[in-house]
Length: 407
Image 1 (cartoon, rainbow, N blue to C red):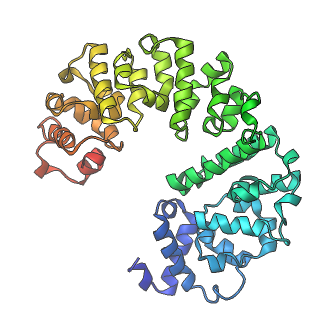
Image 2 (image 1 turned 60 degrees about the vertical axis):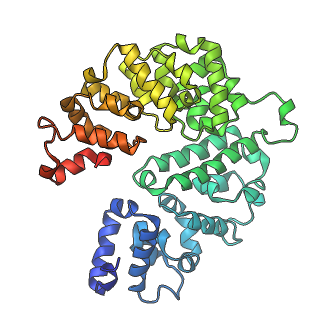
Image 3 (image 1 turned 90 degrees about the horizontal axis):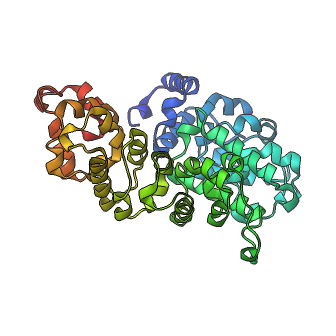
């Protein structure tokens, strides 16, 4: 940033054009760097702090437009704002800017108070609805928020989230905050949050509804009340929902045990679908799993939230189930084990096949392994074998890039 700060106006304009043309790398910067960079570019744009933020200026900034300082953003031309919502919804907004967008939406010259909105308004606002504060969301007329409307809102946000901008835009905290709004919208407008809701029969989602919304947005009682067919068809979807809370996972796991029997009788197919739900199993229960097939081992290995005792139990279970010793694990098995590798003792790691581990390190190096420092050092030592990467003193940049987190 100290270098960019001394760019000439011409160089700064070239940088602006490059970012507008190829926004990917800008989106990969931290929020602070994004804001600092945009501030430097705006400072070179004469008069931008004093006049309304015009359509021409907004388009000239491209992906960076929502990162101008609040004082500039709040001056965005309202006519441009209302007539270009489809374009504006494709952009990336920090948590501070989502609050400004919510304020603008409610201005009399835009859409006015939420209590006066209609179906047409909701269609146009789309995913921006989740920018509104919870106390304002409650003012939306109840008849407007049907199950169909809620599904459309969820789908419009997911479509953006999985696109080129959305996939790089939000950090985990921002995604979590927005999900909490989504969860509130679904549970409030479907009646789950009413004082006497416990006495009511819960609304039970279909598997299709879980796909269009999100399993974690529903109450645990509604998930566990699903029909057996719908529940089994959507078990994998539930297992991959990172926003599913511990109490929700526990309820889902109870239903799994009710349907498929004790943990020791879980089939490889069921194990492969559990995902994060399996983190509610105790170390003793994990030891009872039959982890023979690669698909079920890989499903457990993809989960990053195990505690130390669970990891130890899982690694031992894989060895016992497959009748393999640590020295006989091949590269495919190392890749399948993933995070479970951190359940291996240092003495076991020292016996791993250097060559096979070296083949798997390109994949393993991309994971945020929760191994101890002692375990990590033992894993790195495997790579110094002459048939792996050789002595560390001979490693070049390519090796460090390939081994990733182990570096």
